[in-house]
Image (cartoon, rainbow, N blue to C red; front, side, top):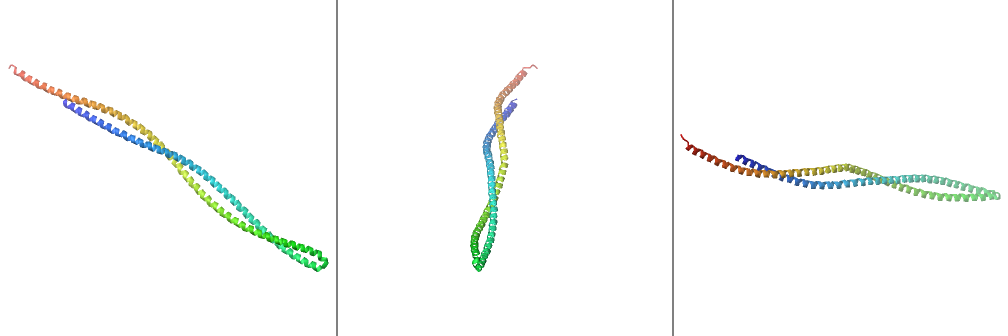
Length: 284
């Protein structure tokens, strides 16, 4: 009986030590969960900032894309205006060329008229007094032809000047049109780049939202895990206290059992002595 009580006391002491060790390990787990909770909160906060920044970036990219569309439309409008200007300048060049041709015709007519007037003056001089009036008319026609020729020369010079200026305008317009065309290509490439950036940001947005939701679920799961660990820790602490009490009681029981065993042994020895004494007094 004494041996069984000692074994029970030893077993309960081991149980108590095991419960104490479990309580210590569980406390370490609680501390680890607290540290993990702090890190999760930090990541959650940073992820929330990233989510907000991603939303702002999407808005800015959308606004930038709209502004780039307006810029492309404006440049295309300018390009269209310059194309119209070039058409007008080309039409002006054609008109100036026609004027130049007409001036040459007028100049040719003036020369012929001047020649005819000269011939008429000669014939009037031959006619004498009878051709005097005709000679006056011939002189006036000659003056008119010379004035026409002078005007055609001035017109020709003016037309040549206009043609030179028109060529310069056409050259400048062509250069501006090429510049606008190049700028249009640059802007269009920029728009495509904006579209790619916007597409990338829009793809990142759902990923950030999904990660944010998962972190939120992890945060809630972490809270539930900590709550469960705390509940288990409380139960283990109660079990530890109870096992310690049982171990103490078992130790006391073991001590009492030892005393009872010793008393039983003494009584057994006394009984044997008494039997021997009784046997001595037996009658044969």
